Image (cartoon, rainbow, N blue to C red):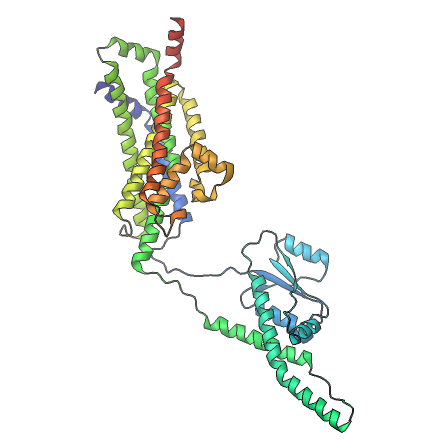
Length: 443
């Protein structure tokens, strides 16, 4: 009991580290959470599609009105910009992000389009210059839709003209009068077809209304579990960093030569000393666990307006994972304390380890699934990825959203965190303090 009180006294002397690493950094993580997760309380959800900036270069003299019609059609959902018809201007427009895509109507396109449509072939696609890595641009699909609808409208508009031309041709053949009647005017039919396609696009746009509908229970459940889970995930850095520093200071104080000699001379048994230190570390870890649990619940209530969306089982599982992760932080601090590192060295190690875990686990990228390849491997070796996976499985978020990950998957990830903690404790017990190792070597 005296050892436990002494260890807690040492921890109180380093209260500044708790306030800085745990409280201050947890509030910073909370601010990041507020900025990154949409607040569904007190505001109506809205939908706004991505708008591309497109340009249409006409090299066919607007034959059949195709170029101008395409500009009008694209302008219904995109922003049409002007780009000069030369290589340098197009390169500058793409390089400076003045446009996302440039479509070129080549010379003779209307004639080729009409000929292909009349013979039953698909229309030739326009030449296009897309901005590199522009994964959000959907204007190319819009252009394909325009050409497909234009082909249908052109064929439908040319049928009456074809019948009239055939009748004139038959009359000329029976009366031996030279056929002076021109064939169907492709340009006139194309203009009419373009107007029909653009008009249909305007009508479809005015009739289409997008509304985001969500029931109260479903919306609340999704947002509450997401906020709570993300809050625990973002806690990976402040939790492990604060535990490393404080536990390293506590264990280091009892590993000093003068303190160790007094304990050896005292009637306290080594087992009682170890149990006292263990109780102190467990008490500190319990306080940190309760603090971050209450903080996450408060943040969830503020951002969603209620805790009704949370269910007991996922919260208990996630809290258990966090408690095991706290033990993992304690085990690292135990190892550093057994090495009798100075306060500055313990601080440096805590920050390096905490940042490495946060970066490689995906905690600051809101999802472990985005961390792949060697980074994912490092994240697993540093245990942070297992912690995030356990939280995602427990709350049903991230890559497990909309499905059930199962208790076995959660237990596997949480068990891996516990195994890391156990392995580090064994390493710390095997190390001992440097001075003690030197004395053993001399004797």
